[in-house]
Amino acid sequence: MNRISGEHGLERMVLEKGAVQSAASYLEQKGFRHAILAADGNTYAAAGKQLEQELTKTDVGVRLCLLAPEPSGDVVADEQALLQLLLEVQPGQTDIMIAVGSGTIHDIVRFVSYKTGLPFVSVPTAPSVDGFTSKGAPLIVRGVKTTFPASAPIAIFADLDILMQAPQPLVAAGFGDMLGKYTSLFDWKFSHLTAAEPYDEEAAAMTEKALRDCVGHVDEIGNRTEAGIRILMTALIESGVAMLRFGQSHPASGAEHHVSHFWEMEYLRRGKRALLHGAKVGVACAEISRLYHDAAYRGMYPGREPAQLRNYGDRVREWLHEVPSKAEIRSLLRRAGGPASREELGIDEELFGRSLREAHRLRDRHTLLRALNEAQ
Ligand SMILES: [Zn+2]
Image (cartoon, rainbow, N blue to C red; front, side, top):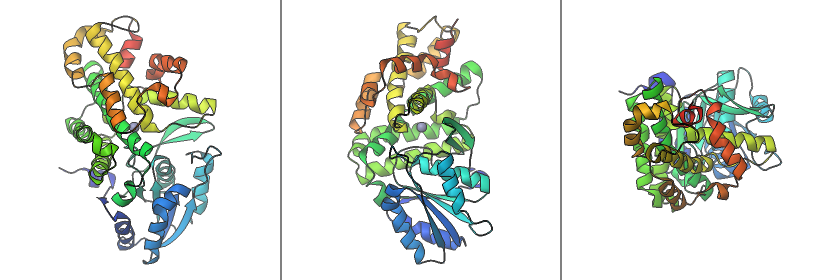
């Protein structure tokens, strides 16, 4: 049963060498004539320019929206970037937008797509996150990061020639985002058992398979071989589609993501340059694994023993058995070529301790982290 295309309009997924050419012919065949191509300087050089050239061979006209970076050098999904893209939209004429880049550029385009009703096509330039198909856009509005409803793309064209050129830190971040599924899948089962949160076997199985594929090919991913990049990008897309199918982020986002968001918000407050999402998630996953293993196997709690562990300890231990230890997760992160500890990320001791105590408050979601912190 394939419910994806009907429900969400994601009608085409191409992952191969030369996918950029397929994107151009797809747009032409679909009858689009007035496209906006959104990219930043880096992603324009990596893929945007090539796509623009391909489109000149078709009847699809293209306006370029080269998103300006902040002084830090990063493009940020904030008011200025959103307005820059909106200014390119020609009412009654623009009929399609194209996001060329990684997560942030997609967030800007997917939000404008949602608000204008214009469809968009995704051309990822790095296998760095699982959010390409997300229906939520984390935006920074007046300095505060909030997730707003947004549109999923109608098609993804992931070009292996381009993805294989992606910088190593972005590849390692994509792997870190996938490793985070160890704890997110655990937290999802835990929340279903202890707080009756909704659960979907199919979405869980899909996410778990994607995770295992990545772990089984970690060295190829670390070496950025064609096979490794293909496996990682497939896994990231599948994880995103599992979330689309379920309709919420439970399959792919648990306490490790809440801790990562906590760090991100603090960095924003301090005016520090953002760390890569997946790099934070991978490191946070190792720390959450340690905390969970300590609690379930060694009776070490931040406060009291949570009732959920007293009542469901056997099930929790059975599920945690599937979650590798902190040392194992760190070793996998290293093999993928990414940072493996909070020190390498530059997260200081104070922020780290506070995030473990408070991150669960960022989301209205039951996790073992929440249970541990709220145990009376
Ligand atoms: Zn993520």
